[in-house]
Image 1 (cartoon, rainbow, N blue to C red):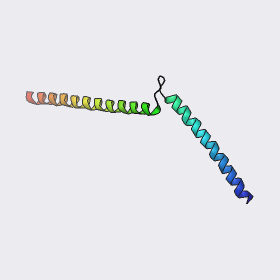
Image 2 (tube, rainbow, N blue to C red):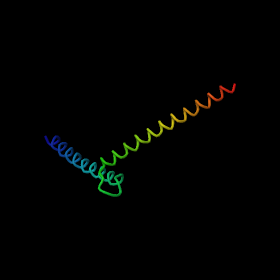
Image 3 (cartoon, rainbow, N blue to C red):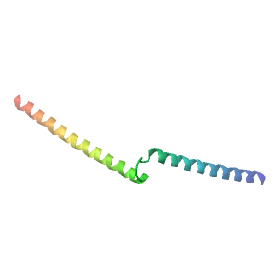
Image 4 (spheres, rainbow, N blue to C red):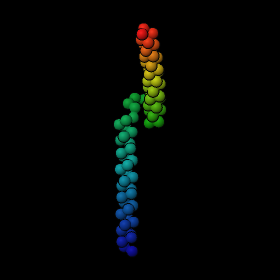
Length: 82
């Protein structure tokens, strides 16, 4: 009976301690990577990052299509010369 009580108390102490540790860790990460100015939230920052990634992807796709078109034009010019 005492062994069970000891393990129950020990589990409770470790559970509570780890909860406090995780909360502090998350809070520190949010403060470290959060926005510097304004009252933006983590969600707002995530949305901004998502939007920036979509814009970067679209820019890369456009650039890739433009380069491909240019290469095809050069290939056609070379084949017309021969």
